[in-house]
Structures are given as C-alpha cells and as structure tokens.
Image (cartoon, rainbow, N blue to C red):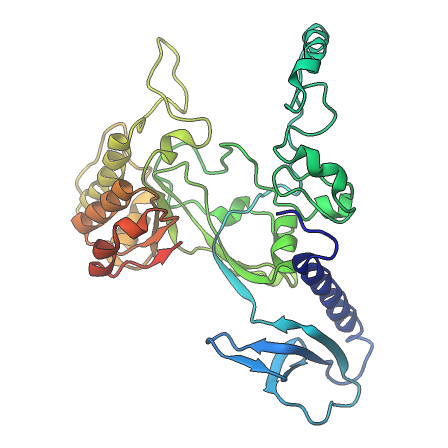
Length: 378
C-alpha cells in the first residue's frame, strides 16, 4: 500500500517520528539537567499488552523507564508532556522472526545491455508501452505508474523508489533475490552465529524502531539445512547495549530453500567441483542431511568415528548434542504441509523440541501441531 500524505498510516508514521524526536531531545538534555528526566505520554487509549485497552490514562517515563501507567491528577514539575489525542500507545512490539540486511543500503540492480541492444529495444518501445524496459527511466516495478504521485517522504513498497533520500533510508534493505549470508562450507553450521554478520547500525533497525518494533529475533536465512544460531537484539538504544542474547535458537529448514537459496546446490558437472557441488539437491537430500547430522553427533559423543560426504564439521557436533538435550532451542522453517509433517517426523525420531517458522500451511496440520504441542511463529 502507498500512503497518501493524509492517510491514517502516514499520520501515524509522522506522529511516531515526532515522538521519537521529542524523546531523543529530552534524553540529550538529561546530562545537562539535575535530577531525573520525566516524560508524560498522553493519548486516547493505552494498550496494556494483555488485551486491556485503557482510555484516558497517561504513561509516566522516568529516566527512560516506565514508572507508572494510570490517571495523573498532577503532572510532575519539569516533566515533558507529549499529548497525542488521536493516537494510541502500545508496548514495544516484538518481531519473533526478523530477517535483517547486514549492509546499510542495497541499491536495486539497474538493467544493463550493449548500446546496440538498447537501440533496437528503443525502436520497439512504441509497441511495448506500459511494460518495463531498459530505456524507461522509471524502475522496473509493478507500481511504476504511481511513482510520480508519491509524496517526498513516501517510499514505493515494491521497489523502494523514493524522491527523498531520507525516505529511501527507511526502506527494507533485504535483497529481492536468493542472496545468502550463511556460511557455505557445510550444510550443517549450528556452531556459527548470525550476530557475527549483523550490522547493529543497519537502517533496517531504524525502520523497525520507527514502526514500534523494539526487540527482534534476528534470524539466519534458510540456505542451510541446519543453519547458524540467531540473536535476540534491541532495535534502538546504545549499540553496545543492543544485544540481549548473542546465541539464541538454531535455525533449520525443510523444503527446497536449502538447495535453492543463495547460489544453489548442484551435482558434479564434469570436472567442475566447487563449494556448491554437494547434497542436498532435493527434499530427499535435505531430510538425509538433517538425519545424518544428529546420528553423527550421537556417534561422536560415544567415541565412534564418523565419516561421509555429509559429515558435519567437528565444531557443530557439540551444538547438535545440546539441541538433542534441550539445552539449545531449535527452530525449523517449513511452509508446505508435507514439509511440516516431515519436520514433525524427523524431530520425533530424535525426541527434539522445536518451534515451527513460516508455517504457511499450518492450518492443514493443526491436529499434528496440537498433539505435539509445537509452537508456531506464523
């Protein structure tokens, strides 16, 4: 959806931006002022976070922390009062499965071609009006015809086009491709950490914070069968204090993502062998790699030598053992019904507990999910 300058969403975004600016200014003056910094937030409704909506109350913030929520007969002397009579106040939102771009800005790729090809293409433009082409100065976007009507502070939700550099800085930085940041030396890398490739100053975090999201589970992508450990981080505040849990749940994946995301896996072709010449190349292979990883970890814990093309790297084995013992949480991405059921069958085999992520067809598996008490992050 593209917001008009007077749409409710645009008004809310501007109100949030103004609120953040006031809070920042108030915090900046804290060092120069004696005593605590007190901010009083008033709005038409305050959402308590437990389902209750409290009308006509205020939130008192003292030195950056909520001190009370309720009716305030007397506003403390020196308090900064922010009144949003048409707004509402909610607790910070938590994104339980956030994919963040480690780079600050990702520029959409430009169409390129030889001058001769562009000349021939330009000659055909009269018969291709309305279709994206290399000589069209607008981005190749399904909403290209609406770009001229965007206000300076607005961003196209499809391609990120904006007339304003500041607005473009708040667009999502996730590449619209199969790009991957996961270590590709093995399909089993639970000993690696997403935090080590995460930019804690990313504009993705600014974008989330302005939308009210204060905490996220930063998830690895789905290019490995058993991927890295995600991190739990705050989207705002001092960078040194943003990391809540540097090593959280291990992210695994069922389905086609492990052999399609990134550069994609492939069988050997002649004498050409590289890092992508490996299993899995099918769902059968994904299941094999997942199962072998836990059998190998079990054998290694008993001192039995392990071998094979799909053997996990040695540092991964103790993490797999910790997952098996319940000391490290496990997430499994599975979208379709048969991938969800495969995940349940595999985890039953090893008595694993896991949270199901991106469960598009979970509604087809409600009985199995309920009987196994599997939490779903949808």
